[in-house]
Image (cartoon, rainbow, N blue to C red; front, side):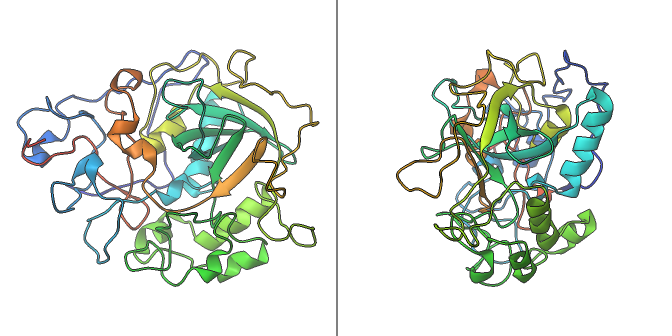
Length: 357
């Protein structure tokens, strides 16, 4: 099966209005034959968009592909996709398509969010974020969730935004990018200046796909500074990597098809609107500006903060046990992750070989 690599164009879709919810439009026969199955009866995500087959030993295929890279060029582990990164050419193309079809001018992104007010802690849902200092709102999809991220914070995937505790980006055998960790800045927060972006590697070890997509890690990092999704600690009391922009508004909204086309993760309980509504806002929003992000103060928590990350690791939305069958659109029940080049998609229609689930 030919590799699935997403570049600048977004899958064609009908005109998007406020009432639009894209159907899966996939045959449930899907790619089960790739797993040695005659039917998809035992698969969690039949009808998913095809991709390359994972070759993890011990039955780790499809959505069970390992999150632990072992090195080499074979597809034995899976990673976060680099075209999900804020400002990638694929994201910017998706934004332009959405603007033309829905008449709304926003940025797109993905990241980590968590809320106890949702049956799935927000996983798979999209949120419209108004960020202090930014010229446009962000519509970002939650593809990851965790105990340390709450409903008044969003952790956005941006280039060199901080590799965190589970770093698959750099510094060890099998990491996506070459070289050590030092160029990546702080563990939490990443590089702390526009100038520091230049020390980053431009491309993954398997560099062809990123180059063909017209992206580079350096330019994506620089773009994040230009668009003010990060704040430097230079000359400030708490120092590097301690400061973040303030969230002025958060509301769950309908996920644009152009964004879902990149993640292949979609809920079936979408709100009606792409715009913020009182019913879909978590407590504390809209924020008139009196509540500031105080991430520089360890005792203040991360409420009202747009934080940042990039760990290159398989997100929690790619594990089937983290999503509920009845909340997801058929064929888009789990996040479609990438090989170590950051662009070629893994097949996630099933999770067993020879139907031996």
